[in-house]
Length: 399
Image 1 (spheres, one colour):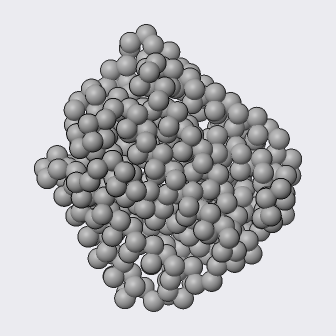
Image 2 (image 1 turned 180 degrees about the vertical axis):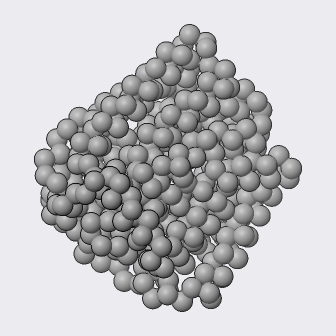
């Protein structure tokens, strides 16, 4: 048995495995969808539109998803959403097999799957806190992130390899089977967790408390603003990957799969590091450092490099992205009362819901300047954000 406190808990192990299989689908579908859209249009701007549509529900459902996670049993919610994701993938695989997948069909599927994943995220992360408690939240989320990135690694490689050899329908069926395994592990969840919300309130009151907390909690609002800025400028790098794989490196689905696998490896390293840090002090200061690392690594990725160097740069970028997610998730949950933690993760989903602006910006900038200059510009802008946050938000440094 792994000598990590959270892994001694059976429900945490099942959540970890379920999250890994869930995320293989998320990573794999981004490989397939990104390549499908690029093949249809030969345009990075359209890849940006697709990813903007994918993440739009995170913004639209941010408040609702957090309220739902606090209102319903999180275990039941995870199971229901997992089943719907698998069914949605199977339907889309059939549509692809029947050669009915025009660009608009891909966009509609993207919107549906993005909506389901926007509802899944707060339930998964807040349930992890339920199990491990606030004192071990960074370590627990770091380990959960490690499991998720492991799934992303497998999903990206599998989707790229299967699509290259057997086509998109087969790739989606493989990914759907992974979601079936995720559902199996979520069905094994037994307890609500030691930090679970006991007294649940009606949905209307739930949302009203949520809005009042957002108005009054300046720390939470500050974290939303900074997270949204990092999401727009940093996470949008995924828009450029199909063009980098096909135009710079002259590869197809296999190459794009390797890039997404490198993303997963970088996230795994970050998750592993934060797992063994335990009760991390000065989370805010660590987060500012991550913003600087994120910006510098994007500038590194912008350089016209061979395959191995490009994969290494993608891994570094993804490591900074994963560390950013883990730290903001933990700080937001610790910034609110226990009864509002699901809604705090709804706020986090709302913040990352600004991603469509970033994907549209990256796609448009790449069309005008090329992917390399666009990545460099966003990296430089992130460095500026880091400087502004370090100087203008002293409270974050003290967290």
